[in-house]
Image 1 (cartoon, rainbow, N blue to C red):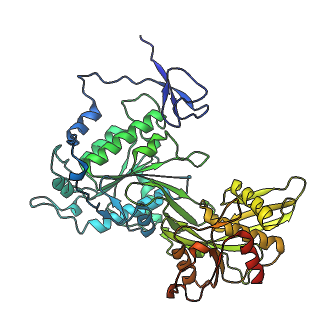
Image 2 (tube, rainbow, N blue to C red):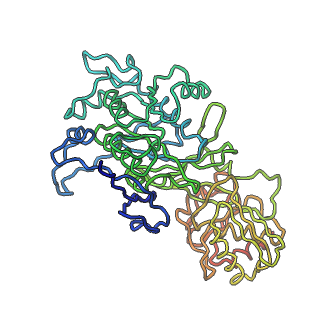
Image 3 (cartoon, rainbow, N blue to C red):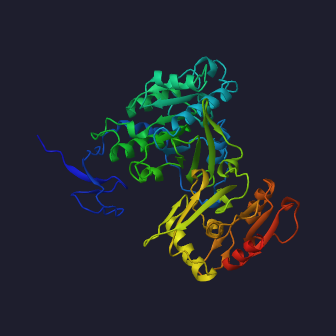
Length: 503
């Protein structure tokens, strides 16, 4: 009996090597190569069970000049969850593949089950079958009578066949999904549920049901008979995701893949998984808190870095229309060390409270930040000392963004520095005070993008004093800024002197 040939596959990028190496030759990751069995390739004249069907469904398009290709806006279908639609760019797109990841128990399955039920209820009254066929409502979870569309059929015919929603669960049984639906108050749902982890059976069900949207929960539990490796391995995750993506593009079915995350919070599996799909969403939040954030990291059909805010209730996840309220502490009076920042998440301006605590330190003072970059905090403290004369070398400095939000944009620099100086002086900033702006190493205050929208959001929420970069100050009076006193600054020492004058 011939010995199986082994390869070493990188669990980060999927690159292979004939022997073990400490460093991956593809992505440079250390200790990421795992031993796997080399899969036999199909013969030149042989038939691949998976590839043969897709070859008929998706013939290659001819070569055309770019100028002759008509740019058509994609049609979107709202999911019934406004915050999820915001992150997706307005709703799901036909043939879109979405990858959503998050910590266990964060609410991924809950949100998707709610979205599928809302989609099903919205589409059932409007889905009409062609003459001579039963309506979709008579076949729960199917587009029409459950028959597969012929391989070369027209797009209009396939659209008429689709209409149902399919939830494929590989981690729970159908009874457990039904129990969750009952807890969420979902009754009489017509969403079709399939408890299966074998890829070939899932593809056969998709071909038979022809759903409009299918959820695979989760991609790490799916395996193919074509591969000998275990479910969740690099090869299985890569191949199963590739075949499901091909199916989505060929059939027009929108596919949502639920992905596991590692202990570092990154999506588990090969990095190529994120390149295959159209949209990558991260579910963030503390399981001990009732608030959840969905952030778009990649989106071919919308803006990236969009954020959706949800609140976990007894009836599932509910969208938060005014997220600024959850990121602002409710102080009866202003307190030292607190400064409100107007940050920008995608296209949404939000107000977040930045809190700082400066305390007497020991021989090795600590610098700790939660929600902001720690290295940037050390840089800002050096700028504060060099250009504003405020020394914190013998002090412990702690900075926190309220509500568990993570802020990556440099526009938080000015608010962080003002909160630190407020804590160091023991004096609170004026009531209704907001600030934003990037601070450079030379002590200058640089403008932040879309400053006018930030100021309008602050004025709308009743804030009265704003310190902003000079380039972000409005050039003319606007009723949208009524009641907001705007102070423009060029340097960090000027901003600190201005705040002291407002005491």
